[in-house]
Image (tube, rainbow, N blue to C red):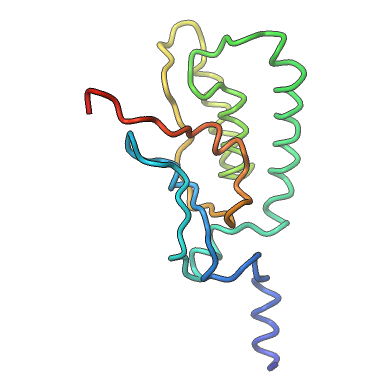
Length: 157
């Protein structure tokens, strides 16, 4: 192995599997009515891996914040009951935003959502914006799958 190839390996550690393995994109959960969200794909090139697969340095802060949000969801949220007028709820939105976008973009998205969640708004479905984040198949956080359930095709379609 040459010195150049060892520096490349150190700069971008190989994620689980290879580019030919099966990956799931965050954006693949945004599908039309009647389609299955979260379909795996194998057409991931190296530039998409560099941008979408996070190393431990980027995952660390978002994991800590996600643990705090999960604690809130377990301890404090049940005391209030279902009061959020949006789907997903503000805490589920925040958990997905921090998990998919990271701390730097996820915190402002969550703060803006909490500010909009008040009795004077109509509520409704307000999904987290799609991102380039990808996960190996089987490693997608459950909050992503929970916030994007399959919606059956209705009679009006």
